[in-house]
Structure formats: structure tokens, C-alpha cells
Length: 482
Image (cartoon, rainbow, N blue to C red; front, side):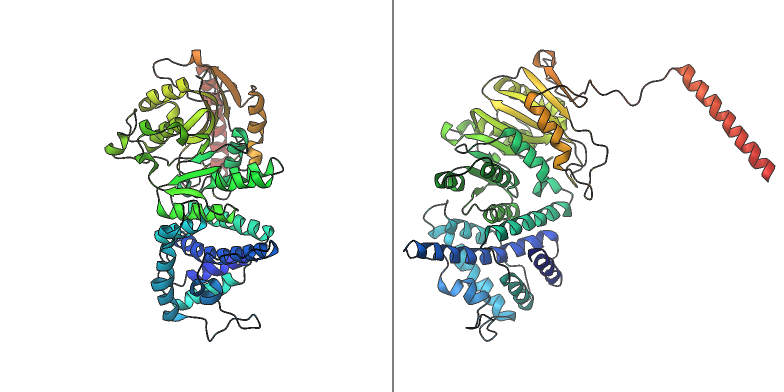
């Protein structure tokens, strides 16, 4: 049901002059889906309150409820074409009344951790780009046929929404900006293993993939009480995101996965001076994939003890400071961090203040469109590193859009990481064997034989002589035939 509806929505949007890319498709689909989802959520809450003998106070006022402006119905439950707005009337209502009304929620909400506040934030950050009221009418009719009330329906919707985020990530060169492969995220979450009662943070949360997967992991690890669910809903997951579209999609993604009022803030994380971070602002678990290859201005660099224009290196300093003593982290970063001279002091800081116990070396193509090789750093704050366990993911195929990373590819890593044992793909390095001036952490696998073995000159000359003889015989046969 959802899959066909998403295809129909995309086909309809392609005909509209105001929508031109995969990024526009998901942005415009998001706000419409959100309002329908919100309407179904309010209906569910009304029933729950009624069963408890209470009266539910609706978040959305009467003229702006889905059933009134979007798809009004007759007493038989069919669309009331006399009341349903379309064309310019529909556009005028959405642009001049609906969006301004929803934007005000941000200022009128009791606190930032309410659904009202998130509604206000979402509609303050985006605008309706659909230029034809007839296009919008068609999409509203498609979305109205969808139901988001059962857990099965919500699961299917969240799964397909993740698919749209993946397509958006693949749409441009910077695929990793919007989409970290979910098998990789699930593996990182499993290794870091957040537990109920611990706080989880991603300061570059993008589409909130790490927070969503951590939520699913924590729900699946044990039978949850009502109190546990309350903690997961309100006091567990925290994120920050700089870019407007990624921020909106991150909030939507978390809501569709079941977190009603996500604690995601729209801000530049790196604008915070890490010297000002207080103990109460620190987290138990940090999971993140900071932007590849970004550059920050000199005034932003002043917020960090190690000055660098490389965004990922600033984020790593931020994450180390934001982690509580005993806290655990899994951070994706370009593999050049392990050896680049401009990161030597940062590597020293990491090794001195944290136990960098595991480095996962990923193959090229893990991030579609990003064109970089990456590693995952797993560390625990509070004690210096004594030994680093490496795992080099070697696959018998090239990764790409049609051949992505899978959880099966990472299964051996997950199993070996528990004991940090040696294998053809894994090995350990004592910190005493790391160069003390450069702190070079390059992943040089001592257990794999060099496939380009150097041969003796005599052997090479003998093979050249043999090939010359074979070539001579072939030429002789050809000359006789002609």
C-alpha cells in the first residue's frame, strides 16, 4: 500500500514546476505525510483518553485539521468535492493560512520537548514548493488513503521513508551527508551497546539514522516497562543538525519510528566552545558520522584547543569532550585521520584521554557517492589506550549503489570484536609500538600476504623469453595462413 503510494506521489510531483529533485520530493512528501500522521496520532490518542474516561485536547485547531481542510468527507465517508479545496484556493489556504498557523506553535508551546514545539520548528524551516493546486490536490487524495494507526502500518511507513532518505543520499555526490548505510549503523550500535537509562547523542545527526537504530536496538534488547518507554521517549536521544532539510528529515524520521517529540536542535554544533561544556551537558553514548571533507571558518576554530579547518577533526574534539567518563563512542571518520600529519595532536589527545580499543577499516564504496575510504573509531572515555584491535573488512566484490554493504558482510567483525582475536582480517597493536612523535595509527594488516609479491629478475627474464617464443610461433602460423 505505502510503496505504491510513494511511487504515485513521486510521479505526480515530477509534473510540477516547483519540484525538481529527489531532495524536493522527500521534503514536500514529508510535510504532507507528517500532517496526515499527526491526524491519525490525534485520533488514536482520543480513543485512548476516552477509554480512560478522560477528554483529549487536540493539538491542531478545528479549521486546520486534516479532515477539514485536506480531505473533507461526506457522511458516507467519501470525499466531499463541494468542500474540498483545489487549484489556487488550495494553494492560498496552505501558503497564507496553514503554514503561518503551524509556524506559531514554536513560540506558543510550553517547552521544546513537546510535539507542539516540533510542529512549529518543522513548519518554520520549510515551505510549500508545489506550484499547482491540482498537483497538491492529487497528492492529498493519495496520502489520505494511507493509515498510520497500527504498529505494523507505522513500521512499514518508517521503512519506506528510510528508503526515500537512501535515494536522496544517492542523488548527489555527498551521499554520506544524508545517509549512512543502515547495516553499518546497526553494527556500530551493536558494538557500542547502549542500555536503558543511558543518554545517546549525535551532534551531526543528519537524517537521525544513528538515533533511530539505537532506539530500535534498545527496544529489542529487553522487555520494556511503561517507565522504560517514557525514558526512551523523552530522556534518551539527543541530536543536533546544521542543515535545514536534514534537520526536518531527522525529526520526521524519528517521529515515524515512534519517538513523538525528538530532542533534535537545529544549530551549528561546532559554534559551541568546548571549554564551556559542563558535566551535566555530557552523554553516556555518542554515535556519529560527521561530514566528510567540510571546512570551517577561523572563528569556529577558536572554539577548539586543536585548530584545524577540517570539520571532522573539530567534531571529534567535540565528541571527546561531550562524552562522560566511562562513556562509549562509535565514530565514522575518513581513514586519512589515522596517518595525516595535521591530525597527529588530535590522535595523541584521543589516545591519552580515551581507550581507543577498536578500529574498523572499511572498503571503498561503503558510502555511495562519497568517494572516500573510512574507518570507525570505537573508544571509551576515561583511561588511556594501551592496545588497539584492528579489523579490516575485505570483501570479494566492489561496493556500490547496486551492490551495497550488508549486515552479513560485517558479521565476522561483530563476532571477533567480542574477544578481539587475531584472524586473517584482524590484529592488535600495542600502544608502545606506535611512533611517539606522529602517533600514526595506519591500518597495516600483518596477516594478509602481499598479492603483488616481488619476483626475482631471473624469473621475470625467463617469463619474458617464454612469452616471446609463444608470440613468434603465433606470428609464424598467421604468416603461413595468409
